Length: 309
Image 1 (cartoon, rainbow, N blue to C red):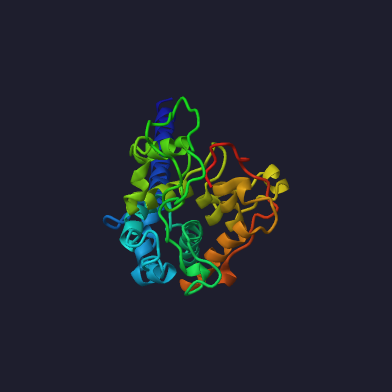
Image 2: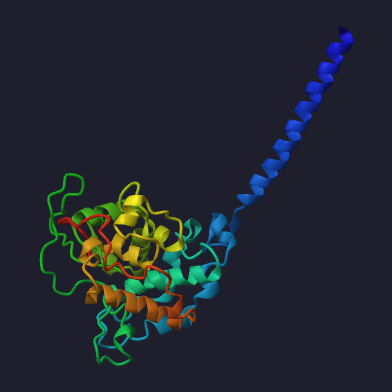
């Protein structure tokens, strides 16, 4: 009887030791998979920081090439936008995967895609403009002739007396609700001071990157997710012709203001900026990716009176 108990105890001990050993091995393996890296101010405390960061593959001269006309005398935001403001804003989102997800080419493509949206929405280029119409991104930092007040009734984000909520920023923000939501996310009182987005280039880029990285509604992807391959479309998405790629980023950011209307100029202009920037960054427009347009996509969120444009 005593011998039997000793054998049982030994067996139990062996099992426990084996379990601890396995746990240790798997624990180390899991820890290895979740390794985080720190690269100073630009990217810290994230697995994404183990990859090349934006300054490793996108430098000042490239920014200057993409936005070569932004500081000409006729540019309305002359002297406002600069590379360091973009990098400073991007550093807040690189640990979340902005420009740091995947291999080098996909990272470069994401920067080209994001800036393609920015360039198209802030351009003052036209057909015979010097350098071509695509060289004039970051010409504006705010809407020059607002067509309306952009103030709507809102219990959560009521309009501040005297504040105007016309389009401002790198991806222009419109309406009090949107200023309130973005300001809350960035911990800046944009509802009371929407003018901050045309006074601080870093904040303007930060607001734009937040929109790129953030789903507009729960159970929906962000523009970042649909572009880098983090999103798996549902059956309903597939039936609605919403598939991963640059086209879906337009759907998320502009909904049916741009998408689901065929090959309209506003959509084609955004695509042209993206491809132009791919060429200038040395990636090449032939790497634009599948599902480039959103001409036939049903909107994720059909436009409402407070939609951004």
